[in-house]
Length: 177
Image (cartoon, rainbow, N blue to C red):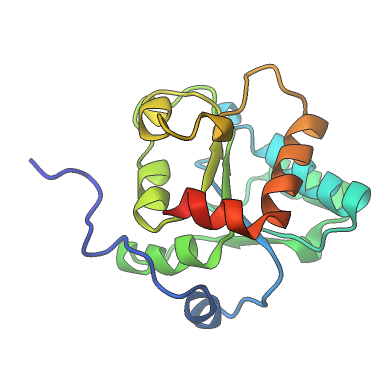
C-alpha cells in the first residue's frame, strides 16, 4: 500500500528555482490548498493576507492550489486583492513540488480533515505549516506545537502569528527542517 506522498516527488528544491518555473516574483508567498469546501476556511486565509497588507504593509502573495470559486473571487475583489492572489490548478502531480517549494509558509485553517495529504506534502518539501490541530496534523507537528492555531483564534491574531513567522527567517528555516 503506497504511503500517499512520494518522497521521490515531494522534496525540497531551491525556492528561487521553483518560483522561476512558476513565473513568481520574490515577494513572500503563503500557500493555501482548497477544494472549495467552506470548512477549509479559505475566506479566513484571504482575510489574513488582506490584514498582512493593511496592518503591516507586507506585500504578500497568496497562492491557492485549487480552482477559484465565486465566493473566493468575490472576497478577493471586495478586499482589493486581485493582484495579490494567484490560483493554480490543473497542473500535473509531479509539478506540485514547485508550488510547495515556492511558498514561504502554508496556512491551513481547515475544520474537518482527518489525514491532510497537502500538509504532509508541504512537510516533505520542508515548507513550514501553520495549522489548526485537525486530524493527523498534531502528530506531524508534535515537536512544533507553536505552529498549531487554536480553533477560536480570530483573523487578526492569526495574522499576527503569520507576520511574526514571515519576519523571522531563522524560525522558518528551523520549522522547515
